[in-house]
Image (cartoon, rainbow, N blue to C red; front, side, top):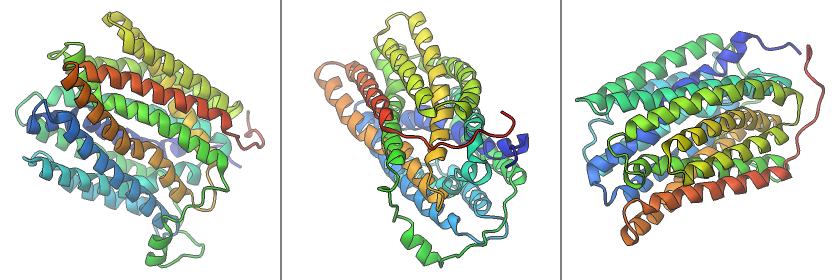
Length: 417
């Protein structure tokens, strides 16, 4: 079994930069800011919870559906690339409707459309690691993916913080999103070589009908990893939901909030990359489960420091440590998922794996919005967001404990190690 080349690693990683660039900006800054503009400060929590939750539900369903369809696709370009192309091109059209949304209902409609179309691309695309990379090298491949994700995660909010305050800034931000998504889609299509699927292929209706038939009982460790990631991403999306409001209303940095978020993203990305690079190699040699648990403990301790800090310097230290731990988590968690992935339908099960990321986008805001609204109105504006930060750490602790029930697959070490 040949060791993957640099081209192989880039081919399964680069589009993650564009995806993270887009979603990092939209979920942390663009959508919360737009909702507040449309409904005002008093209703923003509840409205944002509804919009993000419905959008995430659509994303979950779409990933599983088109992942399952792509598993049996016979297109001459391969199983994944046609969906990557079509989904990205159609998303580009939908992006330019976003600035034109002048009511909550039109904003919701556009957001649902973007979630659907972009996940037509993302559902099949995320199966490229198990498709193209031998399992012995999943740690290194996941590290490449983690670096691209982290770089996008800083680039998107940074671009949004620069453009949103300017006239027609939202429009130009959508132009930037379109350019990045299409450029990296084309680059990935060129880098990845896929053979047409030659196995038994069901009809389109049969593929659709079977897409949500996903047996999980035979794969208990995969289920435990799903539950662990589900809890941890509940923490992440609870923080994403309230971070802008936390800085503005709880800590009092209303004018500096965009800049502080940008600074946090830069710092956590730099330290995250420093954590990701060695994590991939270590995950190929040693227990992924152990490395994952250690990374979660680091993140949990750093998050508690961020929650209770009153000095901005302490906040920066906590953010930096969290970034390093989350960089390790990004690489090893994905590698462990690929290690445990059922082989017969990788994209469909990767769609299920994606639910551990998208379902928290549904549930976390539905919990966080009412909690923040209730405490802010009864105790005082800003108090609710501190409670949400504490709730996020509880989620993360649960996700860390669940890791102990996971059992990895064992096999020979890769050639050349």
